[in-house]
Image 1 (cartoon, rainbow, N blue to C red):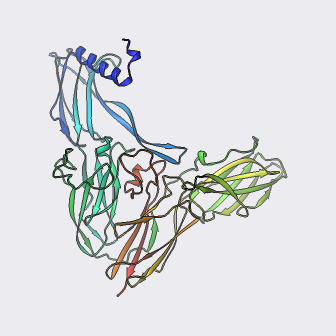
Image 2: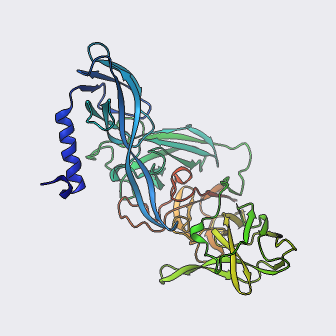
Image 3: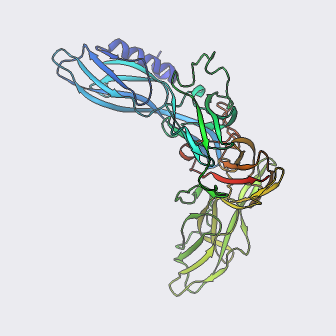
Length: 477
């Protein structure tokens, strides 16, 4: 049977078998398993004498599958090949070289020796990367953060969703999908002052499997390295901030979320800056319009409803932007303040005689509009309003933690200003509300990333990094 009539999987297996049969040398690794950052020794034997050989590291490249910068399909991986180093054999056809395991995904990796990238390998071996985790410190003032970094995460479904627990309460997950198996998660130092327990768990279902480190067929979470820490929360030197948003990235609006103009013309719109929170002062510049022509400028929000099967589309919002008059060169400039609205790309169109002739957009980022009050006895109702929460699936479900305990989420599609009321709970002292991105819906069922706080949001979130939002409330006597 011709190879082209076989499935790709069968063809790959046949090619591997042919390569093994034609391999002429031997490659030996000092270790079968290793951690990112370990140094191993590779020895080549029975190879052509006095010849340069490329040591090839076979791995994958990860990304999130996302449709129209909106619907999250799931974590996806494709093959990636890297030349680790080049070595020269001696007169007996041997070489020996120490090599550091790079930051990469966990699981088994093949290492090949080649002199010709199109020919069969001279020799091969495998090394399995074991995931491991480190904590930046074991003591932090109340309200500050511990940072956990994971290395060698995924791509295997069973090893790419790790859960973080604080005092035996699960906070959320971390994953290394788009950062070659490396991920960071920040954990708030919440009270009371004193000793607390921080632990990493693993499970493709998105919740800890409590036999991870006793009876799991996949071994311990970190293969023998530390996965749990006793940490100390100390008295702060000053009162914590009552409301702040993490630093945001300079980013551009997404063309996929902007409508096409009704008519193709030479007209152009440009906005500066291209991103920011509600209240940002911006300058909108138009060029290439007809001279001394009225131009109607239109701000758009997104409306619709997934659950009700109402398509989500950009809709004009009258009265936000004015009409302008172009000069004799067909240009204009308008300064305006960005309104409170649903987050993500906010389209802006220029209309002439009822037809759009130019389109731009503004990337609207989250803000804490208000939190009140910020102190009071236990049971006090805390009114919180957020704006700039996006409508796409990858950012529309910001998830609330109260003292590192998951509480629930808000929906960025429901309103331009998202309002909720929480009840202050706990002993007298400072308590913390942290709001993190989550994924409202993921098409792939496994691993489960849905509606769980995504703690590695800064370096592994789909489409674009999103900020965390942080608040504090003081319970009085």
